[in-house]
Length: 366
Ligand code: PMV
Image (cartoon, rainbow, N blue to C red):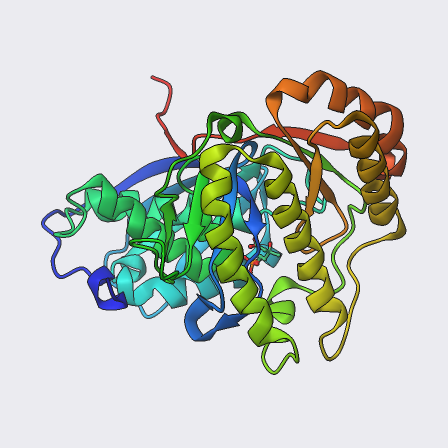
């Protein structure tokens, strides 16, 4: 598929007003996306677990204008309050997707959004937020009788395609369990344009994998991920890093199929540390992990060595640590987290999550 396939040709219905609500999950990458080309095209393929509990719920209220105008008209409410500082990101999103959703300037929108996880927890809400908004826009497109949205598969592909234009990793936040994004020669139907459900065998251990997110630093990151992605241009290790991501996806095929946790851990932890190594070796260089991030990593390694429980960590673009482990070891790992890791979390806060089934349309109560 190409970008052109996402430009609708005709709409058969006129819709005056309405409202639609979607709830979208966050995701955590196992093979990391870090580095992008023009138009949010990833420099390398990635794969992520869809999470179940960290979610954004977004409602889109729409009212047709008496005449189409030259501007996008919307109000944005976050947790019930008007939020002006989120507006530029949405404005940019609408600008990027207008070509594929030519009806946006026909409507006044009210966007109501809220997260299931605490605000300023250091958990990025851009993936779940952009995915939920993209799904709302797609539901409107469907109501308008777009000639294209005749099947569910296309609906999700285009929603993922739109979400990607809002925030790259958001395109992996629609469907469940394991999502791959980015062209890979050995993954059929993989695309730089949207995420796909991981197409190969997945052992049952991964379907209920646990992710406990330790909130090490709840503050605003000093370097945004868009700045970080851009620093991969001309990065001395970029070429090898991108090749490594391709190769790790190849290796994960056997791992996902067999449930080989030793190999899973080796790949996932290496990916997390490589992501941060790229930050530390870019120009200018920067560090997002904190002393407590390292304390936690060392404690996890000691615990794994002592107990042989297959628990590991991953990191996103921040100091928080995602502790990953099979459901079968939940009680023991949670006890370890409470006894030994919570001390390194800001205000002792952590969030328990698990692999989930993906976004859901919220049907209004009657
Ligand atoms: O979607 P962005 O542009 O915020 O980038 C996210 C990048 C990482 O979270 C660090 C890795 C990933 O693949 O999710």
